[in-house]
Length: 281
Image 1 (tube, rainbow, N blue to C red):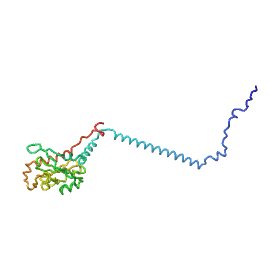
Image 2 (tube, rainbow, N blue to C red):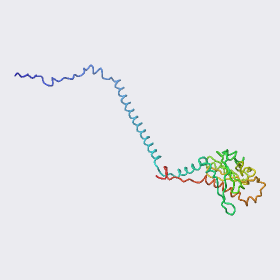
Image 3 (cartoon, rainbow, N blue to C red):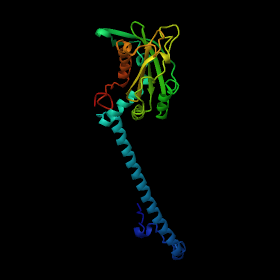
Image 4 (tube, one colour):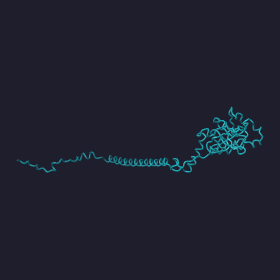
């Protein structure tokens, strides 16, 4: 059996050799000085751009983190600050004139104390349509209210338990408590002027008008000026009634109680929650 003669070539010669590029080709493809400068500027520009993009991303991340922290603070229940409690009370009182039903602003019945400490009740006869502060009050009063930003005037008329006296209560709604205080600071202590009475046909108040007013008064609470005008329901004018008769009648105690109870309800402080999400925090 004949043996095959092994080739005498070494292994290194049998491997395929990688031939280097010719020197002329290398010189032809190598960048020149101008091209090298352009490439170097491009590298530097890319580095600066990468740095700027990194800074923008970092700032955006910080902004997003700050927003998330703020959102968590707003949505996480926490105790109310004293300023927030005050704001809550002011906002609640300021919106009652339109957020409450009419029967809550002007209750159908209001208690008052008559002569001899008797417990009596005034009855609401009717509620007038909303009107401007100037048209629903005497000229001197309306000018002051309007100048200080009076928004609207609400009125309702009551009679005492015997339907002898009529009382119109007017609520002047001011922009805020500060403007209300400025307006009431200019109102004169004149019981001849104030809110204009509202009479309702077919009721005990149909003869109650401006000439029948015996006493006018007002009191301020929150953003409201609560007026009252009281007189006899039978049509008697102010000039026809002796002053001592007014002093010894239930007219003024009834009027003061009716207006006072309405004002007290409008200005009563609400229950303030302890926390931003109720009473649990």
